[in-house]
Length: 348
Image 1 (cartoon, one colour):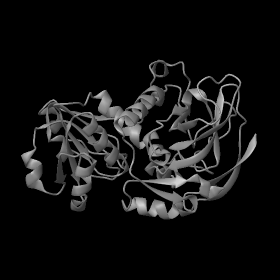
Image 2: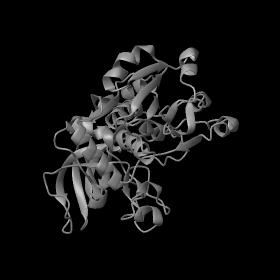
Image 3: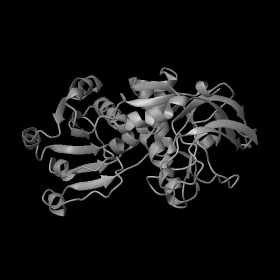
């Protein structure tokens, strides 16, 4: 074991604070990464505040991790000391169930091990995330990062990036398709970039008229302000695919009505309350309403290679770890373009 410094939430109603804890020493197939950057995901706030009622305190958030390899186990073949590497939302899985064998570790039937707020299969102790100095992870759950991109802008790709890339790939978004993206936040801005790079005709739906120019800069062909009913009606029955990134309560049926015959709307934003779906709206055009989450390790690596090839990265604002509570407050107000990233050197 080695002593690690981080920032933790000790309860649902207290701010994050400095926290020391033990990390396991690298085993035969483990990689130790000294963390340079960690993205701030909305899930970090949800878990820190126990919004999903499954937090076990203390909790060290962070699952968009970028850093340098500083130690490798004797059996490691994929990484060497000095390599730039990343860790996303999962650090282990059973590796034997049908989902894992298909490279879908995020759907592990035994239960994938999350980067934080989970149980380490090696030690039986809690997993702690990337708001910390270092992390030790099996090499099979460590990712190679594109060398041509700024590491700080790569960090959010390990959750926000793969969360949007995976459904676009699963539903085979590409040239000739009309695709809608609902919301222009941490997830939405990545979805617009990916859909544009895949060759789709991209429409952004936003509640903020001031985001029109930014949306077009990111790759949107058209921008619709969500409360403009006439604009909505003009697009009825026309979309092949809609990706909804909004994590607060909203009327999804208004967007489902925009789908053409056999169109699909996929939800990746996670509101606290269940969303109400009008069955008749689905039935009238054989539409589908689906859900998705992050991708598996192989697909995440594929996404990173795609980003390197197309020069895609997150738009970020870099903060010090001591600013995390202020960042959480701003995130709740959507006051960031479009992802906070912690410079973890501020912890040292």
